[in-house]
Length: 324
Image (cartoon, rainbow, N blue to C red; front, side):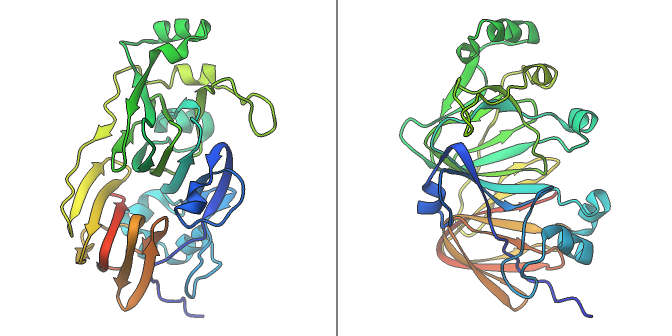
């Protein structure tokens, strides 16, 4: 039986109810769910949370099934050679009605040793921020394990956390080991390594959905924390109808694409799948005779086999992501 030709692929969002979640992903970003939706997992191959195709001839296939069937044609030769049937990135939209826990993520070496997992390097793009919304990023003074442990033992950890105001359009790179938290009133797009390993170090002394205090990972975190000053905020240009580099790491490259007319993107040298996350407006994405409309809050994957993508819109803001 012949395999269907690849095309721009949409997946059904996986919605996650959270104690700190709200209703903005439903009200503003076209998600369909009830309760306090904190996260929409847009593209995921995390075990137990495999994304399922919702459009075209591959509808109802899971992301791992696609990779097994199409291999490099879907993800790119260099990506498939390194990751095999594992999809390397996880894409999310996050709505923080309340402050998230203060947390950090281990690097690749530590995550492999402790959890047989990838580490969790990530980046944020702020889609909405209420007045005075803030993020926690690193420490507000020179820090080491001994000083950190002292504040922790005295239950004064909030005294040493660096808090930064944020606004729509801000972007941040969260390297492994960086102590961080998304503050109340923020909606963001998150791009990260495929990993669900989080070390929670403070949770505002609030109960979880089950009424009990959530687990803290105090001891695991000690060796994983980066005690150096955080330099998370990213600066980037915003030229219309061009691809503007926001962030380049070993794991992903992210560009901002602001479209007021049309843009043709040459993908021939990338050798990777390309994901577009629509953070505002709507656009028509055209690839090799296939076209899909994406609106604010939607995500689409362009298989690596395609060398060119055309995007048309009167107004759209997209994040363009691929493996460098």
